[in-house]
Image (cartoon, rainbow, N blue to C red):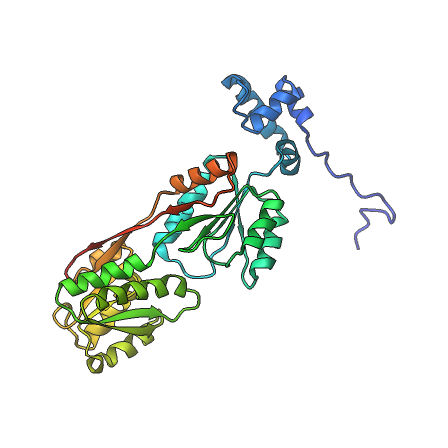
Length: 344
């Protein structure tokens, strides 16, 4: 048994938390200067040598500014809240969201990803509001109402931005018209003489946010010329693709828009294994223009989706935070064009 401490002995005192006054003394400047430097104040001119001294002193002492105190002084936080996606969003959108987060950090915002799985709009709005974010970017994971937007704004959110074709009163709407993807893809197959076209509809939960409007766009293109569109449920597994390919002969389809490049590559391989020639028997087109699609043989035709840069959306957030407006604005963010390759 250890006898290194006596019963009832006082616990060692916790080390003192460094303060801005400690940083100011070590750097030989005022506390106000420390605040200006560490909070990146743009309204005050401070020489670079002084800034360096303050940062070095803060690093030496292990001083970190208190976010809550800074928020009280500014009247709002610098938190931009991003609900975490509930669905597999693929490499294209993952890259876009990563760019957005980096761009917001460069503008001195703190990006907080919030796990909101299973929450209703009312529950999510109240949970998010507890963090007092200055902006919320809800990219379709949870349907927000005007009441939810009001809850967030009363808690200090200057910008609430939603994704979707329909707007929410009080929020800015980012419009990514997914139906354009289906319209372009099937329009390309129709131009190639295909008249019985399958459209893959992913069975994974949550992807209907993208797949439903893509199917609607495909149907619109086909109806314009009297062609047939057949929805094809399929999950993102080899087994599901093989099952679909095994019954392809009975479907009588001569083309397929396979939702995106990942599903297209999976289905194309299964069709080839089942003896279907591509593009002679079946023309295949995907979407997203992933690099790997160009490495296939035959190379995969695709719909290239042009998203804004993360800097563009971050600049929009920053503008709305700095100059809040009551009027709802719509921002069209997506364009689509076909890149025709050997698969159809």
